Amino acid sequence: MKDVLGNISKYAITAIMTFSMVMGQGTPKLDIHIEDQKINLSDAEKKDASLVSYFPGDTIRYMLTASNIGDGLMKNPEIIDPIPAGVTYVAKSALGENTKITFSMNEGSTYMAWPPFYTVRNSKGILVKREATPEMISHIKWNISNDLTPGAASTMEFLVVVNK
Image (tube, rainbow, N blue to C red; front, side, top):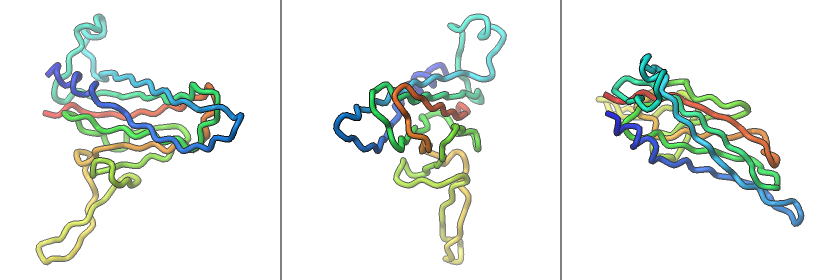
């Protein structure tokens, strides 16, 4: 199951920035740093990081840092991260200071606050609203409420569990 980390690491984060540039104000530049950390390390894995392996049921924390490494103000940054194949989002684990967090069940087409919902027709043909399960989450989006000045950063995180 060591392949799971390889699959997870291949996923990229999409950053969407809306900013206004006026002559002489500089240019914002987004740098995203991603760390993953296995939460339930064995004693051997704690002593030697080269022994870390991922198995079904293991929990992984993703920590994202979005930094403005440019010389201009970054307004209304959004960070979008797909949930990697082979893992399931852990409900209510997404965090981010000064962020509005929303979730997608349809590969990033639409986003909703937790818990997201969907509608289906029941056996009588009536549309009913259902709460999404963590397995249905495909993407997480953080709308950072603070503008990022040059040198400023925002941190976000979420947990996933390796699928069985």
